[in-house]
Image 1 (cartoon, helix red, strand yellow):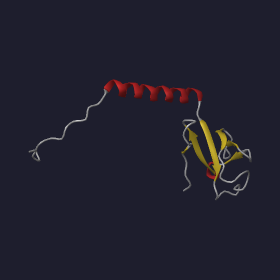
Image 2 (cartoon, rainbow, N blue to C red):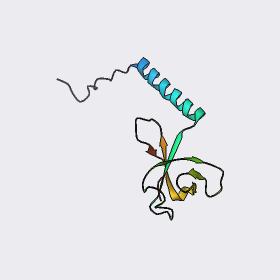
Image 3 (spheres, helix red, strand yellow):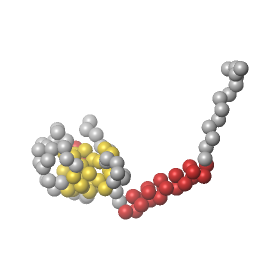
Image 4 (cartoon, helix red, strand yellow):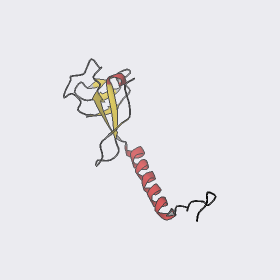
Amino acid sequence: MPTESTPSPLRVVDVNKMRKEFAAIEARQAVLTRDGQKLLARIRPTSKYYGQGNEGILFPVCIGPAGEYCVLGGPGGQYRLSDVDLFAAFDDKKPPTQITFAI
C-alpha cells in the first residue's frame, strides 16, 4: 500500500522525438525570419476610418517608414497603429493570431 512518501511515477520522455519537434519549430522560425511573415489588419471600431471596406474583414498589410501612418495596405491605403488591430498568419491551416489590442 503506497504511503505519502512514495513518489509518483516519472513521465517517460522521448528525447529524440522532442529534438525533432524543436528542430522543426526552429526551421519554421528561420524561414519566417528570412522570408517575412504575412501580416493582416482589421480597422478598429473606435477608428474614424471604421466603415472603409468591409467591416471586420482582415486585409493584408505591411509596416513601412511612413511616419504616423505606418500600416500600409487595405481599403484606405495607410493607417496609424492606433486605427487597426494587427494579426500574424503563422500557418495557412489555422486562423491568424491577433498581435495588437486596443487599450
